[in-house]
Image 1 (cartoon, helix red, strand yellow):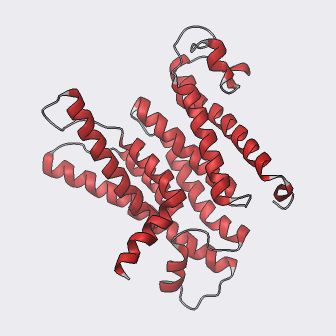
Image 2 (tube, helix red, strand yellow):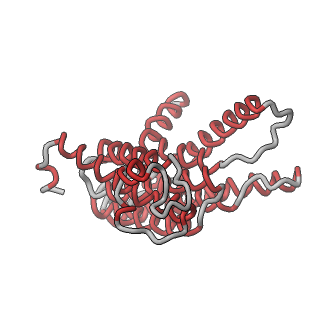
Image 3 (cartoon, one colour):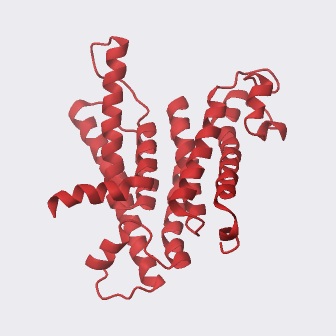
Length: 281
């Protein structure tokens, strides 16, 4: 990181944007290429942006049509990479944030297009979040995560500010966040199923929030659920009115709302929570 700090800031952002586009190309293979084409992925097909325009939106073999979301994912990935560099700087926490953002991006587009949240992303994502919550305090020797100072104050009173104590507090926060994220969605889905006999919440959403909660901690997880539920409700009403439907029972890709809310929480969640908590101090 010391060597990277010598790179001029404008060049850092250029490199971050290019790296984001490359990451987006890899995410496209996961989200689009294999489900649509079902064919071997050649070296050329992994090149970002150019593959779409040169192929005129079609797979190389000309069998299946490639979604216009191909370049969209790459642009979104580049913007998120730039935002992560702006937010974290060139620190040891940056690679962990990038992996988390990649997982969220894949889940958002996968749920939006296929209405599923694959276990192959959410379950390893939960394990990754636990590792990150332990590793980052050791690497940067600072609390870093939003919920760590509170856990240190109320649960680990008297402990020193050593990297070990910070890592323990961070791991406790990860487990609390996972419990809040997955547990609350599971309870809401189970309650709605028992009251209305309707499957309102899929286990994919629950597993996604297991990952999100472990990484963000309980405070930002609550914010994620609130923003996700609010945006999902507004989006559902708007779509229902637009389509002229008379009932509000419709299936929405809730993972899209939760994923976008989690990205928002990562970058500005602490400021929002602290601003709201200020009204009660």
